[in-house]
Image 1: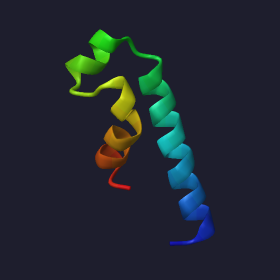
Image 2: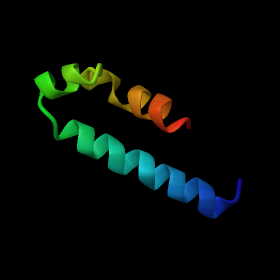
Image 3: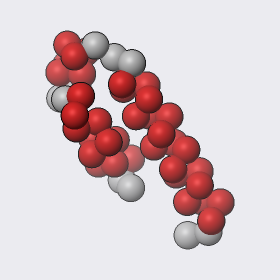
Amino acid sequence: MSVLDRYNAWRKHRRSASELRSLSDRDLADIGAKRDEIDDYVSRKLGS
C-alpha cells in the first residue's frame, strides 16, 4: 500500500468517524454503535 493510499484511507476513516460523532446517542444505537466505540466501529466497517 502506497503512502498516498494510506493517507486516503486515514482521511476516509477520520471523515466517517467525525460524521458518526455528530449523531445523537439514539441514532448511534440504531446502527449498533456506541459513542466510545466509534473508531473501532469505523475500522470494522471500512475494513481497515
